[in-house]
Each structure stands twice: as C-alpha cells, then as structure tokens.
Image (cartoon, rainbow, N blue to C red):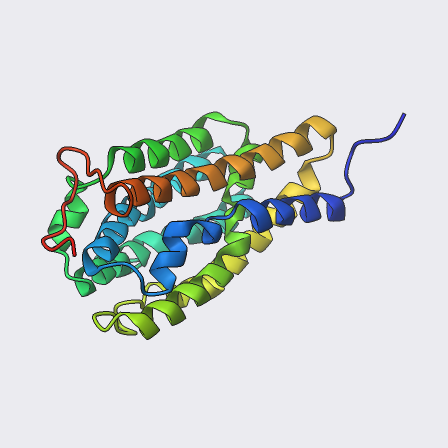
Amino acid sequence: MTNSILSPEGLEAALREIGATRYHNLHPFHRLLHSGKLTRGEVQAWALNRYYYQSRIPAKDATLLARLPTADLRRSWRSRLVDHDGVEPGTGGIARWLKLAEGVGLDPAYVESTKGLLPATRFAVDAYVAFVRDRTLLEAIASSLTELFAPTIIAERVSGMLAHYDFVTPETLAYFTPRLTQAPRDADFALGYVKQHARSDEQQQAVLDALRFKCDVLWTQLDALYFAYVEPGLIPPGAFTPVNRQ
C-alpha cells in the first residue's frame, strides 16, 4: 500500500501548486485592473469592496490569536493585528486602504460605512471570518497561506496601475509597500507551522482544502465585481453605483 502522507517539502509543493492554479491574480477582473482596462468607476468599485476584506482581517486574526495555546505563538501572530489596525488612529493597513479609496475618488466615510458593498463581498468575507473561528487551528492557519503569493500580485498591481491610470499615484498605492515585507514574514510563519503540524493524510488534506477555500473566497469577490461592473453590469440594489459608468 502506497503511503499517501506527504513529506513537509511535498506538502509545501502541493500548497504552491494551488496558488499557481487558483490564486486570484489569474482572475479576469484583476487582469483588466492591472492592464488599465477598467474605468475609474470600476476601480472605485474594486477599492470599496476590497476595503471590507481588509477591515475584517484583524477580526479574523484576533479570533485566531485567542485560540493559540502558547505565548510564543501569540507573539508571532499578533503582529498581524498591528499591521492592519496600527498602533494609533490613522496608522496601519486599514487606514492606508482608506487613503487608497480616497485617492481614486471615493469618500472614505462612505467606504468605511460599507453601505455600498456588493452582497457577495459581504457573504464571502464573513464566510472567511467564520471559517477561521470554527475550523481547527491547523485549518485556520493554513487558510492564511494565500500570503505566499501576495508579492507577485502586489508587484503586478502597483506597476500596472501606475502605468495605466492617471488618477493613481505612488501615494495612492502606499498600502502595498509594507505588505511586500509583512506578507512574506507572515507566510513563512504559517507555512512552517503547517509543515510541522500537518502529519497525517487527513490533516494534510484539510490544510490543502483550507487554502483552496481561501482562494475561492478571493475569487468569489472578483466574480461579483466582474458581474456587477464589467459584464453584464448588473449592480444589485443598494450597491455602489459609479457616477460615470463610461
């Protein structure tokens, strides 16, 4: 009987294969965004909806932090809260994302209210927070491993948006600069934890499924944006409607 348990290196390779085939940098909406083929209103819709994901990440991480059994693990994880919430008002990733939204022409207070969200955005993000709260600690940590692939999409996004949109400046995209170091640091920790603790076939399959789930969460958000603002362009009642849809 063949042993189906992967070595730590084999597990990492399987995780990276999921990213290579399912990460949302492959989504048509992102390809339009990065190549300058979206209208300003469509870029605004992306910034507004992505804010909800950014704003819920600290809640997700606080839930996970409370479940970690040792001080060493909690110290390693809590930097994520500081990265997103900051150490005082106006600092951290959420504040920088609101600056991004303002930079593309949105009212930050409106963005922060989440009144203009697409329903699918809210459902997908809330499902991710619930997943981290309710699943095993191993699955919760594994679901964060999309950060393995973040530097590539950040590089594509920053260079593409600066090259193609005259209303986007380096200051607008300042959110992404710290993520080039934060995401690899966080991914290294989560990957090391998963490789150490996913020892059985069942655990390894759960880890792989957790990453697939997280990729689906990210992909679903872009599906909703594409459907509402690109093709066929059916914006749900109450959702953000660009002033000029051309």
